Image (tube, rainbow, N blue to C red):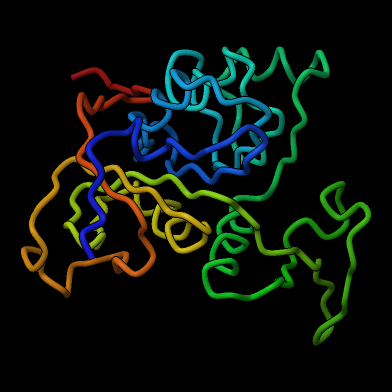
Length: 231
């Protein structure tokens, strides 16, 4: 039951060229930055990355984009990354843009073992091109397939040696859904505690979904957009 590994490098050691990865995070919150740094060091290539966003130029997935490690991005919000924009416009990077709710629900479907979902999001737009549309109760819905990811890489506030995870605030947007959905789920946590230390009522992701866990280092608390008002 002890799923602890010593480092991010050990946790991602079997991630191979051409793998499909889910990476948690919302904006710059809840990004598994230790695992991303280890992937950059390893130099793995031709990755398909499923993530709400593509980080920024010097943080998150943006670091992998700088090293040309990402072949395809499947995302919702990508507006803060100049290198992402450059690679997209130059044709170097394949991009699939997905409505945020659809992205989350396709993760959830994978975790629940469902092959597909029907959603009204995107009907009548370019998102619907080439997709099956069905009519239910007077409304059109798109068929969207559950994701098929080799690895899910998430970041939690706290976890125990059995892999149970507790997330904080905005980091709960995608991390728990992705943790359910990967064939292999890797969790980095800010604080790793012994099994039995967590209140069962506060656990967001049960350890059955998590295969490897480690306590990360140098967690950076960035603010993506700082808005202030005059006193």
